[in-house]
Image (cartoon, rainbow, N blue to C red):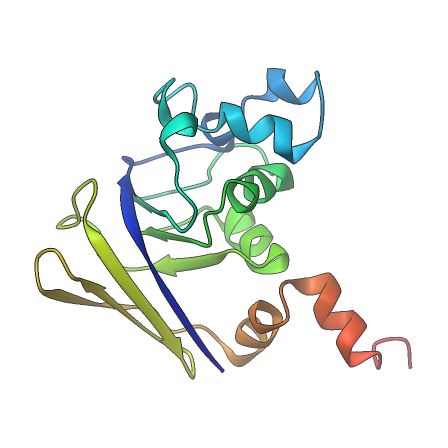
Length: 169
């Protein structure tokens, strides 16, 4: 399986928690991802959601997705057209929620990536290569286990089990 993504870097800092991704107060109003995506990262940058383009890639520092284990934080990113998050490290629950919902979490060094850099990401047989086309730099991400690749290839955990149909046996 090979995944190839290209996009514009949208750079955030360290310790971006799930309430920064989507505020808990917004979930009280609705759980409709098409409505909620307009509030993406509003606590970090009120204009962020309006500036997101399909295919943008989130780039962050350490501990991305910390805080509460809100699965909707991942689904809002996906609803906004974001297919991957590159970070130096992830909160464990966010990382699993990302895989389970089909969002690619890439652990790699992100300190040299700047806002707006054009990135090309290739995931093949577990190996992750990120090319910063703007700066002609290559970054190697942490490899992913086969089971995670299989889950990502089918679009998430539910489609994975639907496809396999042997989990009931």
